Image 1: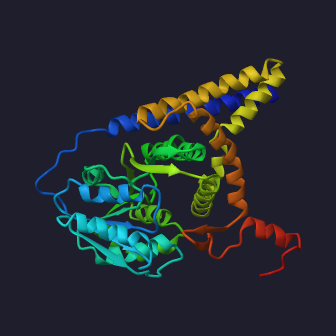
Image 2 (image 1 turned 30 degrees about the vertical axis):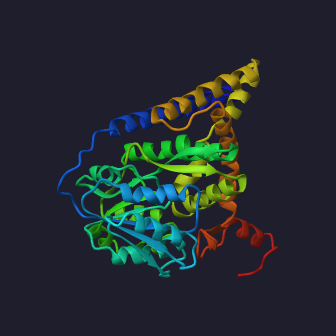
Length: 391
């Protein structure tokens, strides 16, 4: 029978092995994905559709990158919900500065869902006339071969090609923490899932064949989940096809971030993952460093050895792996990075718990729920205790 020391030690070893293996898989995936993509005189037609709202950090840089793409057959469609949005003059100025690029700006809000991004995107999909549809968030910084690299990932068994963001240019402490969330945590696990044949969509970049999108019910089918990328994942899998990831991922400049901004964003993403894939989300509590660090401290205490020494050694191994991944992927790495990763890991259990206890969040100024019909666990608990009798 395993005693407390053995159980704690076994848990630490298992979590360390999983962390090292996931890091190795991500590094191999990045390196195997790097290849020379040549420009061809003939290429499939691509409608590049970018939903935009507001003046985000680095917005002129990211939108301007749309006009420098080295693809011979694409159209550029910007979608904005409100004519008074301050981003409209910027888009019009960029379009005027690049008259050779076939581009248009569509304004309006098609209410097909509770998802404001999907409502904004819908008109662009309906106006597009190319064989391939490429959705790209406004904060994606596109390299010149963005379209070629995305098309190059397509295989006969593919239904969707995506790219998670790679956070670059963080400004300030909380931007460093958010880079830790996006890069060596979320992207790492997304590439592990992709390597195991269970890739899932992320809405930053999504490449569809028009025929496949129509087979799952068109753009309206993406309203079946609160998050369009979760609906896309389920729709593609229903066709017996795979979601594939581009490696390395495309960059997203962060700029300055406040604690409130990253908390709201990370909580929203956690709530959406919990609502769409609750079984996978339940296991996320084990993916950060806090549980194995607690187990390491427990094992050291039971073995009557230095708790501080064991914890520091375990942290060195854990965050040393992350540093190797970040360096291999050419992501931002500084002396502050390990502290930012530790801050991220301390926030992970709090975000995980809060995601189970709340459904409400604000997205782009819209009050939303991660589940439309079912009450959240916090509301159920209040009802059970007799503190909230509302139906």
